[in-house]
Length: 222
Image 1 (cartoon, rainbow, N blue to C red):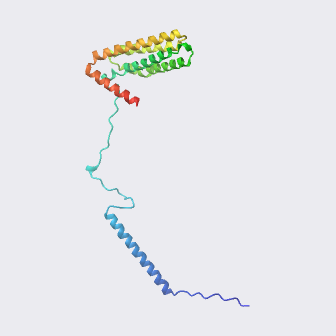
Image 2 (cartoon, rainbow, N blue to C red):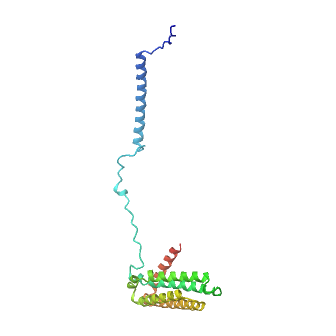
């Protein structure tokens, strides 16, 4: 039995195919020309969608000089400032310790083993340790001015004595005595230092120092 015949497919003539290809090619060329024209217009306007290999040259007058921050001032850069470095720190630590010990005495009815008392004693020890090992370290004492040196050395001895008393404290009576001694020495050191400042520095320098210390304290508080 003969197989059914396939339908005859009409093939286009080669001339028609070539004509179609030529038409498409012409359209593509026109499209590319249009793209080039648009690109040229953007280039004239200084607009480009691709980064330039070489960045536009900046005029020398438009170049900004690199900004340099002024070096941070240290409280130990000059003799006048060094005179305010050690003793004020000692005053701050003794003031804090005296206040903590006075607060601790308020809890004396709870006994020497009260957490309120023990926690405040621990904070006092931290204050005095920081004073002795940082603010009154040997290198700080070497830079101290002559009129201040005696106050600094005395503050260091008093700090050690206070710390040893707190480390060996055993009763409320001892706590009350240590608190009274700390408050008394703080007042004495404060008076002596202020008197020394006015007699050795003069009014203008004292006011400048007070202003600087106040600004530093405000900055630390923030």
